[in-house]
Length: 451
Image (cartoon, rainbow, N blue to C red; front, top):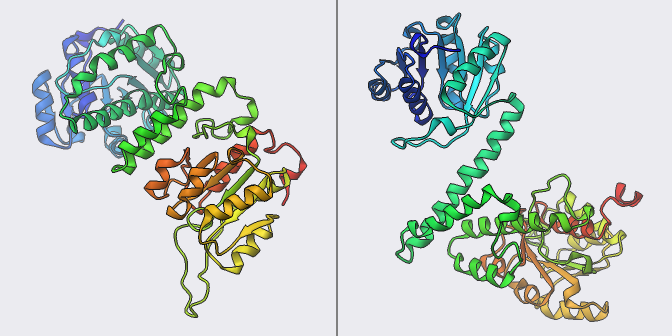
């Protein structure tokens, strides 16, 4: 057992976490001799709350049994050389979720981590008995002392090593920080119609409360779960003046639908290297053909103008090229429809085995329909990826319209799927790979391992 009245704790830091911990220890009867901060006003503010001495010189800290570092991750390492000369025989702890114990164990014989998994705000009281504390120590003696300290604060104490704690911290960022950012976005939207965000509190509270009875996956509701494209497109249209929010909405919707359907999909449809990647909300097993624009899709949005005034130079993505030649080998029809006339473009894609490379096309919808008829294809069997207004009519006509993340806003509004990749930087590989995975043709035989 640890005796608070005979145990002293120096607090290094004066931010939100440090303030809550110092206040908690003070209330429990621990001695808090000193509070350190590089900013005198911050040190004074917290020191006055807990009856401590304010300190801005780490080397001048009074002796204590325990030193707790609760500072920004970036500042943590810079404080350790000075602290090493001060806290020679004490227990030294840090509170960071993402920083390893080894940062301390290289310098201090008795050290550990006490990570409180909670969100802290100034002036907001918390029930510390309910806050999960995750602890780790570098030896048995330190662990015994740290365990007693943690149990004096909380009823929920767990031992967790540094690698596992990193993943816990990542999970907490999604569950807390990202969720709160979504509340901020919702607040901004409501301000446009003069409503206060508190109108959402019953919804937010029920969303959280039902997680006591349901898993997050089971509790998920909304248009993305049921793939209600009518609602999704209307929402994207409302966000037309804020492309960054459109991108967030599209990414979240794709991720939600992916998680909702993942358990029902064959293993081959999942991206095993990145299972949380956005997915195309379309039955890709019925896709028989894919067609692509060049500028802004197969190449980026820039061309190199030559001094002779002839055809400008373009770039081509190697991974896009690999995916296209594999799609051809797998039996999919591939077409390139571009207004450009550079012979190098035709040579590049003919070299990948693509028979239908249409150059100098001024009205793409006409060539698209002609290609469908010549190859006996139905529009809903075709995925088309474009990026700008000349692609608009084809996007509206095909079954599965897609675009890169840097496409024109008018194109994003009608796209069924917005790739997280930019034009010329892997967006074609993204959609081709998803189609091949859905059809069980991705790395399915020896032809995948060559060109």
